[in-house]
Image 1: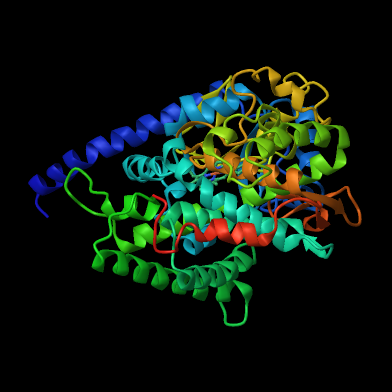
Image 2: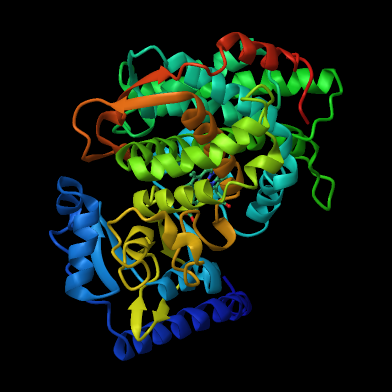
Length: 491
Ligand code: HEM
């Protein structure tokens, strides 16, 4: 190599070398000036994973917060983490400095859902997909789904009645899955729906299992089912293309999207996002619906007041002979407060994860690059400074809007939940039919929480349901469902 070449290389390497030295100096300065947040890192590698998973996670976080304050460090599953339990800190990570914190998920989960699903991304690709997902879930878009969700809620509740034992959470999962299908595909052929449900259930079972991909394990079965889901989605896309159908549901939006260079999304990108939305929509909504049912059961006075609100709607619909309308769902103030209070009490997404993409300074502390950062929604929702007597179910607290950034059941910032209106719509409709037509009893232990991984009442809230005499029969429901033939899309 000649001298000239060496000089050229050095010249080319110089900027990289200078920026490396600058960053190293900057980091040293930060480390000298700033300290890490208080807290304990536990055992090497394992950190405090056992403490977190062997006890109620709420107790773990609450004890830490009591001891160290609103920002503390720990190590979970080999990763150093900073946990943040104040509204300002959550806003800092999720909104004001969101570009410094990227979403982070275990690789096995990313592979299972599909690496192109929007919640794994940041920047241009994320904004492009997010616009499409958000666009298909706006109030204007979902109001068209009311008749179908209404019919689905009635037939679901009807199937529970008669006094047999029902696992409320598992049944709510079926309901929220089918609402997800409606939002994604509009009215989908029953055969496709069946295949999607069957394979999605296998994916769901394997998702939280230890990721060993060898035949026989739940994880392997889930990987195979995920492949089949991709094939089914590809067939649905192919059929739409061949029929030249231009739908406005989520699948339609994803299929018709073009970026500024007229690039369309690949089938894998579409499939990953469809599975991603189904995944984000199912357990979360089912869990909240289960909690609402439990809270109403446990508070007879509240139940009576909610019944009175719905009786007026029921009567104005000719004793439930006409379907619920979008406008009626917008006018259920007490039910709205019960839903918000249930979201606060249960705090389904107790926390979320991000990863610092650079060294970050927050309130005099260093959050080192590569560390995980966890805004603790549940701690904020259960902080007596923002929600007095936080363990008490009190829907009236939502007569006044909560203080800014203290109530984040659907997250905050660029990754906040685009399905929040749909989830609430499902709750209005289920509560309406539940309290006007049914009575129910919870069976067995009525306290206790289980994490699946979202908090759910113990054993999924086993319950028995009976139809109140004088309310409508299944025949009326079928008539209403059949008023929308399968091939006709509600969009
Ligand atoms: C009560 C039910 C629900 C709750 C409590 C909930 C909660 C959340 C939260 C907290 C986030 C933000 C997570 C983060 O920042 O890391 C989120 C994101 C998301 N949710 Fe929901 N969700 C619910 C229902 C739904 C439904 C029904 C849909 C779709 C039909 C949906 C689709 C999504 C999607 C696609 C994201 C990712 C958004 C992004 O990364 O830009 N969710 N959800």
